[in-house]
Length: 312
Image (cartoon, rainbow, N blue to C red):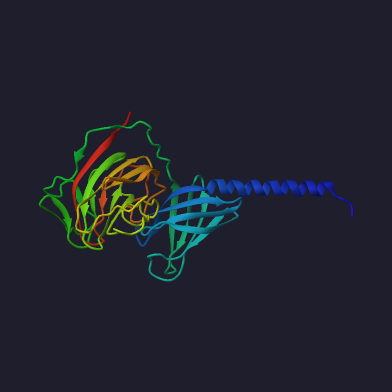
């Protein structure tokens, strides 16, 4: 059998072209994406990360409108269409959520088949880098809770929050409480107290939840006390007993966050990958409010002080 050099050369060229096209598709899809899912008349903020495992397999992480970040073990990419499936976490039903989408002019768009079998549309834009300043200059600290009433705050639904003896109090599960004002980069001091098995959270820019929960004595975890929910794990568990006042001192510049809990640095200058479950929106490039979680049981807050970053 004679060696056909022309056929060999054509095969090499086709292989190169196919590899180039596949790699270009990979490059367009890889990265972090801020999603909005249109479901039953609501706009649900969500998040997607796509990256390559080895030379050719695409994997990732996904955050739905609620719950924590969950891994995507395999993302199929064929003829410019990508797809993946997510097992249910807190969603009703037993079926996977199945996503299909396509890269279009720098954005993503596609469909989600929910656990009930219904299909919904979604769109996504590439998440911004949010550059941090190397030598930040801070402004003057100021209280954003006046210890008298709810001026400057509003409830996400029917309000159950009250002010008693200078303490912002939610006595039962209900609505979240949100600042009227929006913030970009800041230092935040906030004190809180919960009862046994208490659970709440402080949302930074309304998008990134720092967990507040009764976890004294537990091993650190990204869904427990002091964790950036589902993403960043504290280096130690410093939660006090239920019924004691505790404090967070949080610095957020761009995506970089430092969390000091009860006087100890538990997360030091770490990058927040994306929004957490329960976020108000997925528009990461914009300032956002503080949101105090009030839908997980009784919780109290006091001494809420913000120091804004002065831009050069």
